[in-house]
Length: 80
Image (cartoon, rainbow, N blue to C red; front, side, top):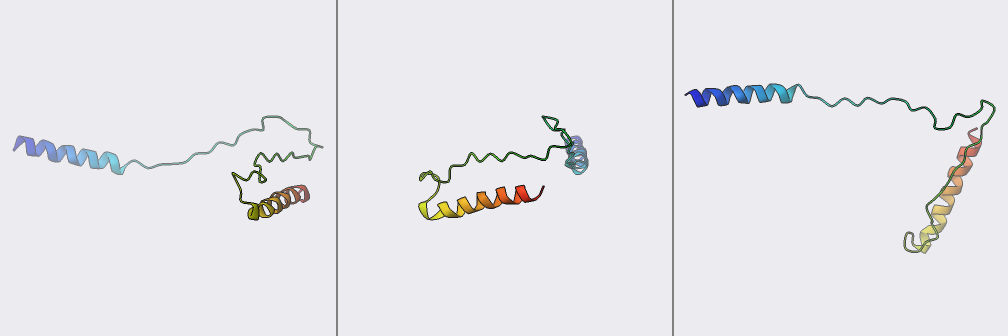
């Protein structure tokens, strides 16, 4: 009886501890690594993905990747 009572108490304590845990995502804004002048509106877009490499992209998809990268660069440049 003593063992059963301890198991029940242990079970209840474990359930209380588990039910009170919840994940809360807190995000802290990061300051820029390099402070820019207020008058500067230049952004550098660096594309390290080589869409011409046949081991990464099939030849039929190269034009789609090229258009996507060019479209992204155009969208970034017209946004400022």
